[in-house]
Length: 384
Image 1: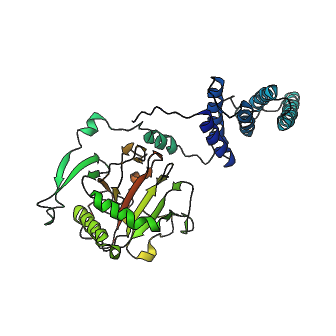
Image 2 (image 1 turned 180 degrees about the horizontal axis):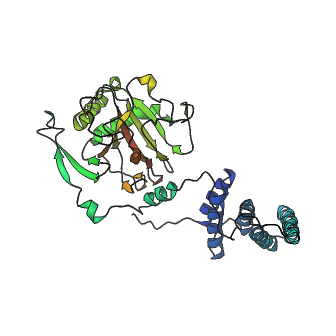
Image 3 (image 1 turned 90 degrees about the vertical axis):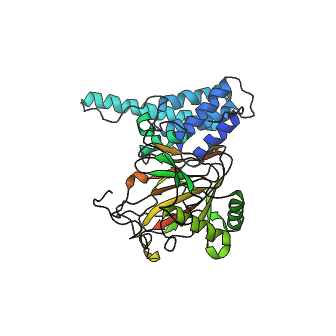
């Protein structure tokens, strides 16, 4: 990836840790405050004091039940500032708790009770929150450019070709360059899908309408904002400008699917830190029918246009099979969310990685089942 001369300062790490602390995320509070303390101990110049760092760190560590380390950090804080009232109060409280624990342990020994099965917390090593999903490790690694499962054997099955939309008359003379990004499920990238002029016009139309992007609550079906989707979006109709109709028609020609039952063109902007954590584009059976009011069935396919390059971050990743697709201005990626049978392809769970440097613009078209019954007919099996 891109190498930068700048690095996070003590102040940066402290700020991130404090934000996590205010959100009640003590796991990341510990990580960021430990890094801030490490850089401070190494002699980095900063306006942040060790006392401030230790104050947050000791309490975050206490939240994990690690009394011994919480006391150790608090004592270090008091050695730097003996007048710190909260630290003194916390230390006395920690000592009382520790004494109580020892008394209970002695009582258990004397009663010869079976020891509790609760694991002992190792100093400096803490568990992630209970709502943490294992796939997050894979998702985060893919966003860092690690863990991509592109083997030489798989790479041999990927090709580049000219795509004419199954001999679509509009594309016979000027076919699109198509590149396989993944073999199964099949994900392809198209080049030179949108010109710079078209991109700027789409952005110009979208900017005044941008609003915080929402997600559909899987239990209630109600649209709401969520911390796992940080972006702004707007929807463009063909009547807004001839360019919108032109882009829609181009996506129809490339995919061979109809835009008549597709959703409006969605434009999304991800600023620094903007992201969309792992999610499905299609509606699952155990959810309220999210698209019932549309009357067009489920989302059969996703066509995603990259309308900007991203200096760092912003990849589209698929944790289930370990693919990472990096933004490239003017290109587009396409995949089917459903098998031909109409069953959801759960492998297509994907995420938009956080933007680290720069800004990310995308637009996408979601094609639906209705109107595409004969354009993409059922296969012989459920997973064709």
